[in-house]
Length: 333
Length: 177
Image 1 (cartoon, chains in turn blue, yellow):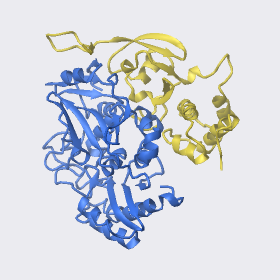
Image 2: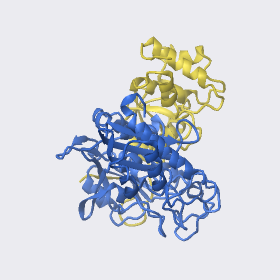
Image 3: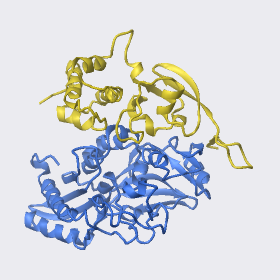
Image 4: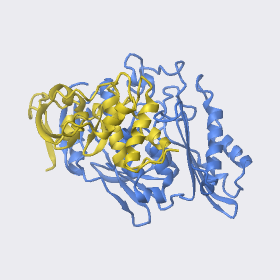
């Protein structure tokens, strides 16, 4: 790790003031990703601003029937919170599918959103990477691409977003609350993370002088019919090759609304509202699910070793929708 | 209000990162130590406090060998800055035995031959202690899943599982099959 100075702040206004104009400073909360990147010399902040003393640890109901999760609540405390388990079990499942118990005890909600890709070339200072050094080139393209993107990638970056939690938050239409020098604003979850385009060094649409204060869940939690399917190289404690958060609302055998978010396939949790809207008005049949899966993955492009992800994603989508339908029939999602 | 600088030399010339004093309630005893901002809790335990029971395996949060309990929760000390844990209660493997008697988990690891080289063992035991406190594991599969952050290069997993199960059985907390 490089030498840095350490600042502790006790309120949001101080945090925003402290980082203003200091592009080499970083906020630190759980530290599970940032400190790892610092040990690899990928992140070299001149100053760390400790935000763990900010009053952002509450999970509270909102006036419109949703739930507001403070940015510093640990992943563990979100996953096991009684209201999350009861009303947003999809989020619980997704969180518990990620990392290890120790990491979930440390990692914050805000930090989960801000974690960086685990692309091996991004982590390896000896290889060029546009995300690390804009304009340097992408070493993943033409390299070992088993874990890389099949949707929304660019000629500059084929990295994927590693989070499980964020896949569920995308399916739930969560809202991210941030505060910056200009005040507070809310960012729809699907607008929070970015496609790489020609600026893959920018992961999110949160500005660097803004701090995440909360993630808000809307009232509808899809607690009846949901599934989180994660396919990975070992049974636990591994990042997704492909993951799917599926949620359904049904009436008398007909789907009224269906949502599908994909992880492990793109630079951001992947939604395709046009494709998933074809679920509405249809029976919950394998044939329909396969058709929608085809549409969801249409336009996917492999870059060699990840070609298997395209059929894998389709099958995982079908399986997750079938599991979601069976939620209340003993089919453990 | 609300801001405390540590490690700076004040205004003017570029800040020189300095050391700062941190207090840890370590295995029940208050310990004061000076750390640089970048000193991990793991390095503070091993290098400054001479508690080498906590192991440095990967140093990147992938193996679990450095697992300790902070304020009762199992965490990875290699990805924790000591300066951020001022005032925290830290429990390491050295703090488990009481009056010369091994903790039930330590005894169970011996009884079940739950290690070969032993390097991952302090982390396994601290993690298992956290697991039992959390109260989420009911079945053997739950234990496997919730212990997946602790790797054992010797492959002693079946015996580690048996050791943890035996302690949870004794406290009435596990259904094994």
